[in-house]
Amino acid sequence: MTTVTSNQTPSAAIITGGGRGIGRAITLRLARDTPVVAVGRTLSDLESVCDEVTRGGGLAVPCAGDISELETAASAVDLVRSQGWSVGHLVCNAGIGKSGATESFAFEEWRRIFDVNVHGCFHFVQACLPPMLERGTGTICILSSMAGVTGVPYDAAYTASKHALVGLARSLALEYRKRGIHVAALCPSFVESEMTRRTIHGLMRRRGLSEAEAEQRVAEKSPAKRILPAEEIAETVALLVAGESDAAANLAEQGGYPFVDGR
Image 1: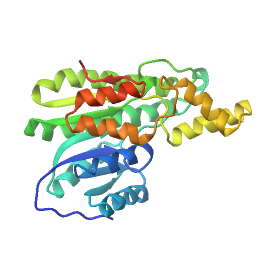
Image 2: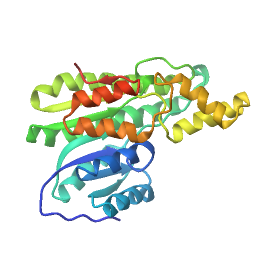
Image 3: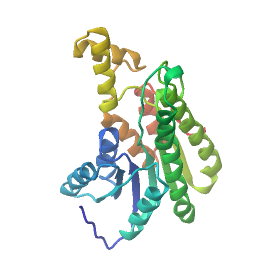
């Protein structure tokens, strides 16, 4: 496990799903500018990314736990404090999905998707708001999806959960902007990740396509006509955390996806 000591009390970022995929890219990018607490279920992934941050001269610590459980959010905030840091930024990135026809979709799967994607985000927002309000400043970035602003067939649970996150971000932005907290939701289409790879492999199986052909089909579904690199999303988050909201919105526009911040 990575151990961090510091004589300063810098503002830290908590990143859910910070050990893999988009979350890993966000962890590595934000750690160039601020201490990071990477949250996720798999300790080995978290330790790996934190060790990479440390080798690069940054500060990062892992926090293993299921974000759908209220105690995980509390543990992450306690870990920030134990390092002598303050909670300055929250990135709600962790999410899961499962496709299927709605008429036969198991309620247990529906509930699990909402427990992670929506309730997990709410737990962390509620845990991080008090220290942010005490300081009078903070940033909350919620990773939604293009599925959060448009319908997706055979993906009702994931789509509904991502719509809920956009609504949450809009409400939070209006509720807390006069108290120094900036809230935004990013809604990218396909990003290079395990989830996108599963989509590509599913197309290969169902349509008999080569991997290159399936990748092209997926890319064509994106407004930007490309699969976005995770590092590009991480840079948008970094701009938001740095207070460069207009630059973050412009980068999101270049990626062809909505940037929702209550304006």
